[in-house]
Image 1 (tube, rainbow, N blue to C red):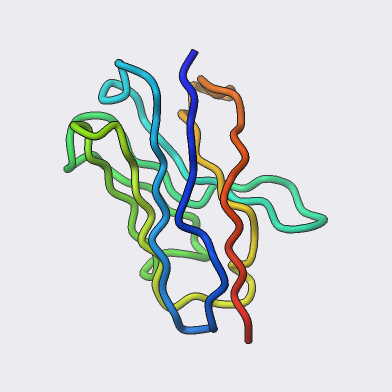
Image 2: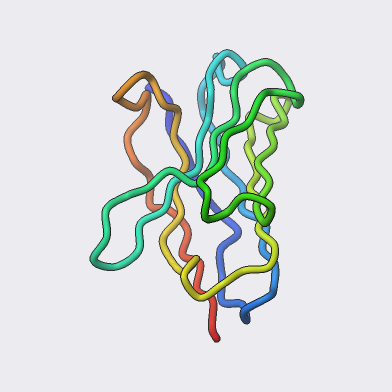
Amino acid sequence: QVQFVESGGGLVQAGGSLRLSCAASSSTFSMNAIGWYRQAPGNGREMVAVISSGGSGGSTNYADSVKGRFTISRDNAKNTVYLQMNSLKPEDTAVYYCNSPNGLRFRGPWGQGTQVTVSS
């Protein structure tokens, strides 16, 4: 079963930037779409960005709230997906997770996530 390990979170001031990394254990990593999701206190988990399979030029999809600020990318040679987050806002504060969507389900268990805190 594929597993994911997220890293790169931290405390940053509004307007700052962070780069998150998601390392996957699966040998079939390059064949699957990978997404970033987040969960703020008291809220459900929501999709942030998804990148399709097929190399670094895979198609992408973003939540409206992060379009133009966040960029998802992947390095299949390293089994890693990145989330570059710029112009961060306090409402971006959440625990960020990665996983591989498979219809309405996900291919792996949810990991520990990485905390992102944006101060105003």
